[in-house]
Image 1 (cartoon, one colour):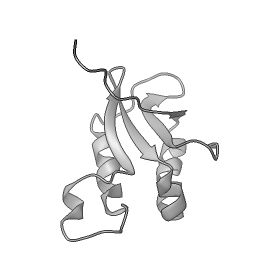
Image 2: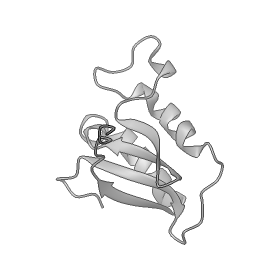
Image 3: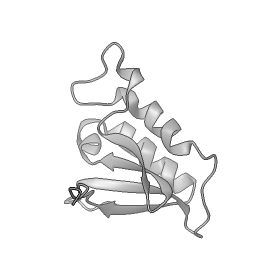
Image 4: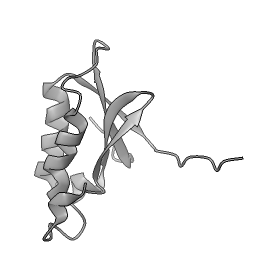
Length: 105
């Protein structure tokens, strides 16, 4: 369960047992499927970029998908889909806030 105050949820490419989830491009595939769910809805060509609500990334060398909780508010079925993907595949899910990179010194 995700707390109501969370802004982002990270679906990590690690199983509950700590194994790396396969296939290696799972994060890009999941985010690609979710590309149509975006602020303002799908538009022509929106399938060519990731939705700001569901973005693949890497965290400590592991693939992950960052899911913004605005998706839960705007598209509850899409939110259920990504959360059930994580649950069905036994993936770790954490609430977090992605901090910007510090400026170079």
